[in-house]
Length: 350
Image 1 (tube, rainbow, N blue to C red):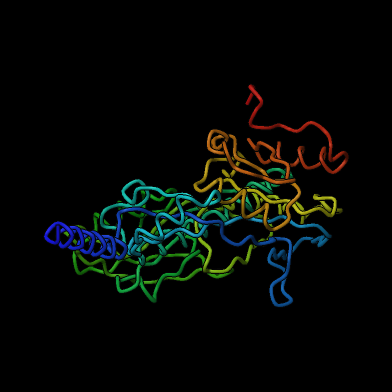
Image 2 (image 1 turned 180 degrees about the vertical axis):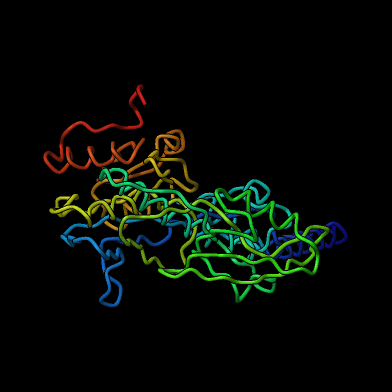
């Protein structure tokens, strides 16, 4: 009997030790939690988030809130207790790390990609808002990111408009890639860019990285606008998912009266230059964040409608968003009558 008791106690001790060890072993999962919301119509330290120069701006009441998600980073360790906490939290989510991040992705690379996506999204939101207003918008090629430590660092800047590389006029991002690929190692390339109101000529010498010539920039789609519009969002927030809400805030700022009717509106969704709304990640957490912030209405991208089952919006209404134009019409209808029928995810027609 004593031997059995001793063996049992030993087994319990070993089991307890295994559980204790498991509690601190990193697991290959990522957690999602509701993040803060940001009213894009507000001001930050006395400066409006949406800035306009060369055209009259209207700063009225009401709120247009972008929503965010707290996501564990590629190099962040998620322990068993943290995983269980997220699993049983109705507003949180758990995903396999491999479905969110590439195997070689780092916290630094994720931050850089996220910042570049936000910069591109801001320009695209301006284009969508101005297109909705009937303004002429021309596309250009801009620098979306400059990699520290590579040849362009300190010479070229994010948002520089690429006009020419050597003798090659730049009409699309691939023109920049081709010009660098065809360069001679050790020979400088002359970049002509527009920086603000000035044209600047800069010599950059490509260097070989993993068998390819690189200078360390990410060229991408940008726009020439008839007047200056900018959205000053904190650098701590990245990604493209605030596109729709930024576009609505810009539209509201450029039109008299309050688009929101003084209410608190939130939402999410990527945006194209012509105003199509695209899907995002973390839809349930963003709805929860907006609900907790006291929003009255939330825009759900149509492509995310299948992912909102089980989410609790509280008293907040959910409206499906397909395009910038449709979202403006939805807001107009809702402001006129908060009880009116709105496009929802239950609609069979898109």
